[in-house]
Image (cartoon, rainbow, N blue to C red; front, side):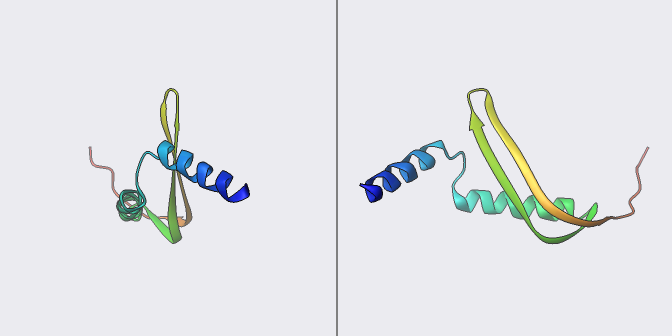
Length: 74
């Protein structure tokens, strides 16, 4: 019974998924590249996408060592 429950849970989670793993990895790499222009990052970046009735919420988690100097153009 436990194995059937686990499989049902995995199917439901996959149905809720907004992005497949490969697409999510591409977005994480792009975000890490862009954020590294402004911050010195250590470790990896993690993206969590949660879908709900009103749309999706994104949570981006990464460790920042420092903010880099950059110019703000007028």
